[in-house]
Structure formats: structure tokens, C-alpha cells
Length: 224
Length: 120
Ligand SMILES: Nc1ncnc2c1ncn2[C@@H]1O[C@H](COP(=O)(O)OP(=O)(O)O)[C@@H](O)[C@H]1O
Ligand SMILES: [Mg+2]
Image (tube, rainbow over all chains, first blue to last red; front, side):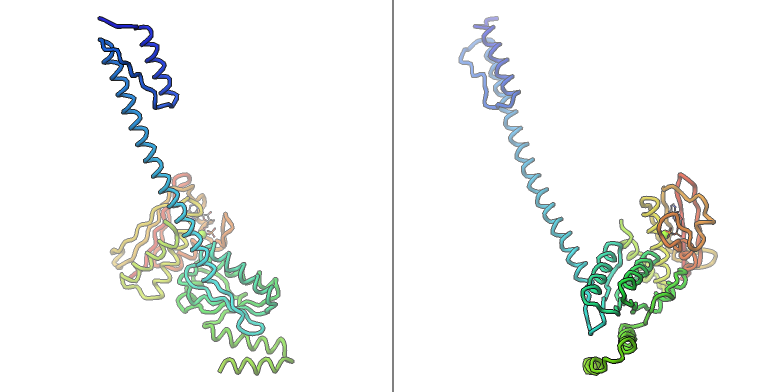
């Protein structure tokens, strides 16, 4: 076998391989000697070419994946934000009259929503100084023991802040179900409809503040 | 799976199968209690929904199976107001009162199975 400068060329191959291994993909052997050994040199250069292509390809795919992941994360953030917005929106506390707050609850009462709802209501009670609040659950399809527990807690917290809390909109089916569950809601003032609750609340107001007749006349106007 | 989704599914099937609004509400609420327990105490489990004949009754059947810690004293767990957590302790006994047939089986360290039925 005929190999020129064997020692030097093998050293060169080692150098190139070490350089490539260190991350520099530009390195090549590029020998211009033609002999029995140059085939191996050329083959190594080709291998490095292939490796370079492969790595570039992988980098590209990785970049694309990272791009996609970023997009998904952003979308997720938007969804979470929208859910939060929705939760806030679906538990709007409204001050209807001088002394009365109404909180209509729509949809499913999971723990997180109940928490937000309760905080909203308590905030509003403090902010407005209202002494009567109505929690209308006409739009709540299922009241299990956890939801009932949340309702009881909301009512006692409101009470601590000096506000009476009436729960309205308990359908006959839900009323029966609550009774069968064995939960005692007798400590809570409940009314069948929001309208019943309003009438009750206005009477309470009259009872609490009999001097404010003018207010009541104004209220009657509003009711018409 | 989350409690709300499965509960909606129960209500949907209860309605499809022909249960009235009161019975729909009862079975959905009873099932809701069982789902919550599975998530709370057993890190979830499986829910089977079925319609079939049981003791000559056409029945809507829901079975909840978990591989959680199991219940040590079922008699206690079935008592009103008994809770090992900070629940009201009305889930299991309340669920039983809401349905036509209630069956519970539990082995400590193996899991709990609860089956409820409502006649159609
Ligand atoms: N799937 C279950 N796996 C393990 N323990 C359970 C399971 N379901 C109920 N229990 C136990 O039975 C007790 C009573 O359950 P329940 O009547 O639903 O009341 P609560 O959930 O309010 O505690 C629970 O506190 C818990 O210790
Ligand atoms: Mg429970």
C-alpha cells in the first residue's frame, strides 16, 4: 500500500474530527494527494457533510417546534384569561336599590367560581354598605353538598359584615334534592323567585328604616 | 375528566333515557357527590353509565370505581355529618337517599366501588 505523509495525514484526520466534535462543522480534511488513502479522507469529508446537513435539519425542526410551543402557550394564556374574564362577568354584583345588592349566579358553581363570587359579593357589601343582598341561583343546574356548603359560608360571611343574604331561584326539583341530601338550609332566608326575594328585601328595608318613606315611594315608582 | 363534565353527561343520559326533571336532578346530584369523593379521596376513578333491568325494574345505573385508599368504616362513612375531610359529611348518605338503589363496597388500600340506580 502506498501512503504519502501517513503520520501527518492521520494527525490531520484526528484534528478535523476533534474540531467537528467540538462543534465546528466547517472543518474538512480536503487532501489533494491522490493515493490509496485519499478514498478514506474523501469518505470522512462526505460523512461530515451528511452530519452537517442532519444537524441543520434538526435545528430547523427544533426551532419550528419551539415556535409552535410558544404559540400554544400564548393561546393557553388567552384561554385562561378569557375564562377568568368570563367568571368575573358571570357573577356581576349589581346594586339595584339603595340598600339591596343582587348577585345572579349562572352556570356551574365550582370551587373557584364560588370563591370569586363570594369575594365579589363581600367586596360590594363593604363598598356600598348595603345591608341586604340577594343571591339568585336560578341559573345553577346542580346544588350538591359542596355547593350548598359554599352558599352557607357565603351567607355567614355576609352576615358577619352586617348584611342579610337571601337566596332565591331554588327550583322545586333542587329544593327536594337539597332536603333529601339532608342539608339544613333553615338558617338561610330562601325565596322561590328573585321577585319574591325583592319584595321581601323591600319589606325588610321598610322595617329597618321606617323613617325613609320617601325612598320607598321612589322604589315603588321604579317597580311600575 | 372533571366533575362538571361527567355531571353534564349524567344529566344528558338521564334525560335521554326518559327520567323526569326531579329524577334527573336527583341522580345527577347523587352522582356529583360520588364524583367529588373520587376526586377528593381517591385521585379520580372510572365512571360507568348504563341502562338495564334490575330486580324487574328498568334502571338507569351509574357505577363509580376507584383505586384509592378505600373506606375503613363504611358504616361510619354512611352516617350523616361524618367527614374525614372538611366536607359536610352528607355526600354518601345523601346520595343514598336520592336514589332507588345504593350499593357500596370498599377495601382498604384497594379502592371503592359505589353503584347507584334510579328506576325509569
Ligand atoms: N371514594 C372514596 N375513597 C375513600 N374514602 C371515601 C370515598 N368516598 C367517601 N370516603 C370517605 O367517606 C367520608 C364521608 O363521605 P361523604 O359522605 O361524601 O362526606 P364528605 O365528602 O363531606 O366528607 C369521607 O370523609 C371519606 O373519608
Ligand atoms: Mg363527599
